[in-house]
Image 1 (cartoon, rainbow, N blue to C red):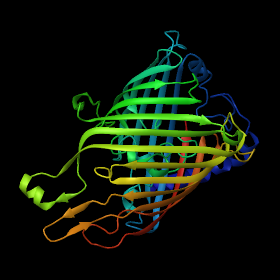
Image 2 (tube, helix red, strand yellow):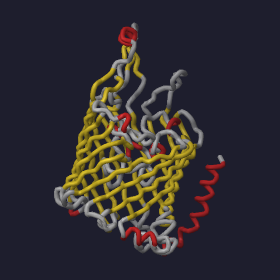
Image 3 (cartoon, rainbow, N blue to C red):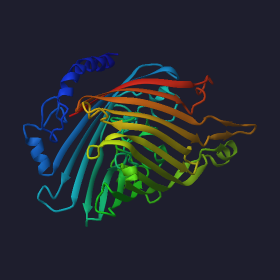
Image 4 (cartoon, rainbow, N blue to C red):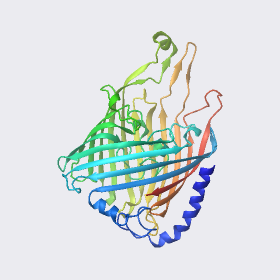
Length: 434
C-alpha cells in the first residue's frame, strides 16, 4: 500500500506540468533543451551527454512503475505494484576514432515487487514489463553484452549475450517490453516464440541489408542458446542439442503512399521438451515423463499507417496484425492472431502522446493426462483485449491508463475446481526517461 501510494502521489504532482509542456512542444536536440521540453529528465549533463553521443557513446535509461488490479473476475483482486529499470550503453567504434562498422552494446535490467500476472487466470502476462530481465521479482542482471561488426554496407555479424525482444518481431504500433506501448505480452510480440527464444541468451547472428538502408529492408539469421537466461553467462550450458535457429525478414512498404512494414520469419529448435500429453502407463513403466524432440514455429506481422502527419517522427495512426503457427506439442500455443489500431502524436500540441487498441486470440493445444479410466484436459482457448493512452506529461514523463479484458486459458482453479471468470484488469504505468 505504501508503494502504491507513492505512485499515486507522484502522478498527482507531475500532472501539474501538463500545461507548461503543451507550450514547449517543439522538437529539441537529442538531450538538450528546456526542463519541460527536452527528451530526458537529466538532460545533456551540461553538454557532456551530447558530446559523448557525438563521439560514439550513448547512455539511455528508463524507470517504469506499474500498478494494476483485477477489478472483476480472475483469481485475485489484490492491487499489485511493480517496477523495472533499464539501462543501455552503446559504443560506435567509428565515431570513437577506432575502426568503422563496429557496435558494442551493454544492457542492464532490473525489476522489483509483484505483478498482477498470477491473478488473471491467463497464459499471457497482463504486465509483460515484469518478465524482464527474469520473471521473478527483485533481480538485476546483464541482459545484453554483444558486439556487431559490419563487413560491408550490406552484411554484418553479431555475437555475444543477446537481448531478443527489442530486435525481433518488430512492429510500429505493437512492440516492446511493456513500458512504452501495450502492457500485455500478446500485443507486444508473438508468444509462440517464447518457448524456444529466451529473452537473454548467448547467440550469433548474420545481418543482411539488401539496400544498404536498415529502414528499408533487414534480414536476420540467428543461432541462439535455447536454455539461456539473464542470470547466467551461459557457456557452461551451451549444447549442440539445445539450440534455436531463427530467420526473419522485414521490409518497408509504401502502399497508398503511406509507410508500412511486412515481416515474416521461421524458427526451429532441436531442444528436447517435455510433451504436453502424458500417459500414466508410460510414466509408471519408464519412471519419467514423455518427451518431444524439436519444435518449430512460423510467424508474420504487418503495420500500415492510414494517416501520417510526420513520416520522419513516426507521427500518425494505422493498423497492425500478427499471426503465428506452431507444432502444437511441445508448444502449448498452436495458433495465434492479434490485430489492432494505434498511433502517435495525433494532436499538434501533443506530439509525444501515443494510444493503442488491440485484440488477441490463442488456440491452445490442450494438455491431457491419460489415466487408466479417463482423460482430462485443463485449459481452453484464450482471448484478450487491451486499450491504453500514453499521456506525455513531458517528453520524459509518460503516464498511461490501461484497461484489459481477458478470458484466460485457465478454466478452473487447481485444487478447488472453482471456475475462473473473465478478468477485467485496470492499471496505470508511469515511466521516467532518464
